[in-house]
Amino acid sequence: MTASEEAGKLQHENPYRDRIEGDVLTYTAQGRVGEQQLNGRNKRLVEQYTVPTPFFGFVNLGKQTYRFLGLLELLRHYQETQADRKGDLRKVWLFEFRIHPKPEVVPIEQAATISASIIDDSRRQNPLVELEREVATLSPDEAMQPVRPTVEVEGLRVQMLQFSPYDFEHFIKRVMESSGFISVSVTRLSGDGGIDVNGFVEEGNEFFAGTHVQAQVKRWRHAVGSPDINSLRGALSTTAKGVFITTSHFTRAAVTEARHESKPSIALIDGDKLAGLVIRKGISLT
Image (cartoon, rainbow, N blue to C red; front, side, top):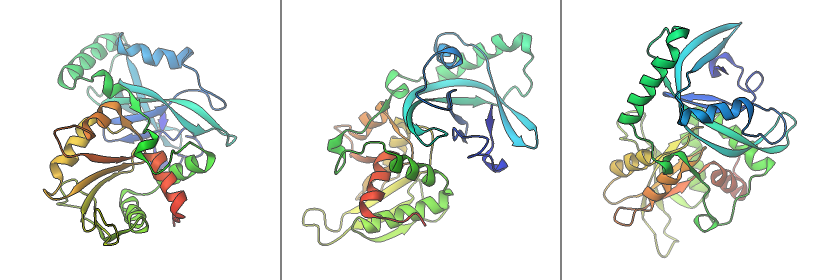
């Protein structure tokens, strides 16, 4: 059970900052204070990789109103750093589920059979290799300096998650301008082909002056996978360098794909790296 952002309960009744994005539910495990453990009900979720146990998803719409989302299929689980209800940093477990809205009614006595059939069909059509289940930590050589989760970094990441997609794209425009890019522009809402922001390297950069950079910007909670990297690469101008910017994380498969030796390289900026950049540049979120 999770809460709807539209119900205005994201911070109060939904302190874990769960989010539904498309057909993916990102859910933080049980345990509101201290380090979370993979035991009890949290452990039961992981077992769905091998046993198609039916999980029922519900969303709290407010005023004691609930809506059945559908049966849930576990895509991946991984650890990240969050602040607990006391404001202390701790390790939590995140679970990403694919929401299957059909059938709209699931008789309890048939739930196990229906869930097994849905999960089997889904995994045949969208095989999830091991590297797509794992989330990568961007290594120090991919950043100007290592970014360690701190209360400030996590707080900034949470604030950025509250932006609307439109406001987040314009915020990234400001981040790029503060980082030395010129002629930075946000693409129109339609017809962008997957490109959200365009910019050019300033003339003062001896090696890359004038280089066209195109960014895809995702204010996501769920991890970015290799299909997302391929999608960006296919949308790039033939002369542009690509960068994928997200408030979430990248799977190991996404990192591998971004560095493919026979394809144009894609630069990656995850939520922690982005928050660190904002801190170093002293960029205001307002």
